[in-house]
Image (cartoon, rainbow, N blue to C red):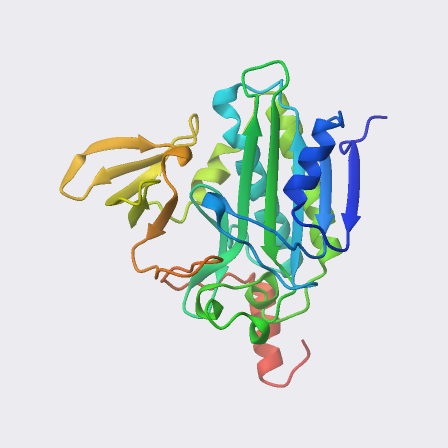
Length: 298
């Protein structure tokens, strides 16, 4: 019987799990390979931003693919399905309601923060050789898991959250989160190999849809647009100019350095937040949290 993961290894500390997986692919390791670390000394996000999580505070992992079975134009779906699998796993393990975790285009995960949705996880996709006979894709994801609010960095505390805090402050089992993630990932990858992608869930979770956003381009220029949706074929963000609402165009993730939703403050490298408010807990978790506040059983 074939196993989904060709290689799975956990490290106490590495520079970057993406670099570990890249080395595995370079040495001939078949897909899908998985590297997990308790801590990274050189974690990174999109556009060269740094990624930090204290030891024990996050689930840090990277996946390696050889997607010869996937058209180059759909390679973005590997990062998207990774985000969806982690969102579903996080909701299950933290006791959140379905679709409580949203996606800020292209792939970041957001949950309940101090004043509304705040960053839960960052996703970094890196590809090489797409369209050749040796394509490679590496998808890294760093999730704020069992990270207590009291230990959040001061500069980011108001604009980030963790699965522990989104779930009412209860301890979060990273092992259970990892297994729930792998289970969902296997289903999603096998479906994608068969030509199926859960575009409905990807579209429904989009945080940017219907909001004013500022696009930051590689040359540091900016443009404010209204996000009207996403395109399930290209993965593009669909936008309109506030001054010309009938003129819709598509923005690919490689064209922009960052997307900032209206009301979202500029933050240092790490995890920016977003204004708004919603209760992300499942009904059972909300009742349990209420009982805890009133002295009942949690």
